[in-house]
Length: 410
Image (tube, rainbow, N blue to C red; front, side, top):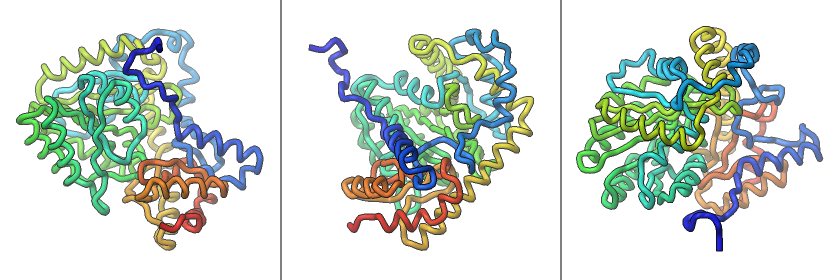
C-alpha cells in the first residue's frame, strides 16, 4: 500500500543539473579549480568564478527595514507597485492593446507551474518543445498531464511544421490547447525566434482557435539578457493580433533579471483581448497562489519596484557589462566550435549553447567522456548544454576542441 495518491509518481527526483554541479564541486576539491571546467551551472558567474549578485540590486535590498522583509505581501497576487512595475518593465515601449493582469509568483517557475495547474484537466496533454527545460515535464507529471513535444528546429530555424503537426494532432483529442514556447534566449540552446516566426505561430493559433481555444505560455525568463536589448521586447507587439479565443501567459523571472535566484520572485502576466477572460484567469490564479504558497516575499517585490524605477540607469549599466561578457564568451566558443566542426543547435543569444547529439545513447557516452576528463556539462534531449554563463573566458578558450576530441564516433 501507499499513503500518497494513487496517481503519484514514486520514482525519486533526480535533478540532472544539481547532480552534475555536485560532481564538479567534488572534482574541484580533489584536483583543484584549474583542472575542472564547470559548465554546468545555469547562473551568471563573473570572471573571478564567483556568483554575480548585482550591487545595483542588493545594496538597496540590504537597507530594506527588517519589518518590510518580515511583512506579508499586500495580497495573494502580489503588491500593487510590483505588479505595475513588472508590466511597465516589459511593455513600457510596446504599444499593447490587450487587456492584462499581473500575478506575482515564486520565480518564473511559479508562473509556469501556476498556469499548468490552472488551465488543463487531468489526463489532458500539454505541448512543449522537444529540447527544453526539464521541469516542464515534471510540472506536467505532477498535474497528471500527458506530454506531446514538437521539434524545436528545422535546420537553423524554428520548426513551424512540427509545431503545427503536433497541435493539429492534440486538438483532435481535447477541447483546449496549452502550448509552451521558451523565447527569447531559449534554455538550453540560446535560440531566439524571429518576428516572422512569431507571426506564423500567432496566425496559425488564431486559425486553430476557431474550433479549439489556445493558451500560449511564453517563458521569457532570460529576456533581459538578450544581446540586443532595444529590440528584445518588440515581438510582444505581435500578440495584439491574437483573437479572443487565444490567451498568452508570460512567465517573468526576477531570479534571472536581478540575479536574485534565491529570493524566489517572478510573475505571470495574463494577456487577452477580452477583460472577462483576463479576470477569470486572475481569479483562478489567485486561488492557486493562496492554496500553494500564499505570499511572495514582500521585500523581493519592493526591491524590484525600486530598482527598475529609482535605480534603473545604474542597474542597466551593471547588467550590460555582463551581457557584453556573455557575448564575448559565446563568440569565442562559437568561433572555435566552427573551426573544429563541433555541431551545436542554432544560437542567437543568452546563457547557454547546446551541442547537437541526435542519439541519446551516444549523448550519454559523450557526456561521460567529458566528466572523465574534468569537463562538466548537462544532458538535455538530443544534446549537451554548455553553460557559458558560469564559465570564465580563460576556460572558454580551447574548450570546443577539447570537447570535439572527446566526441564518440557515430
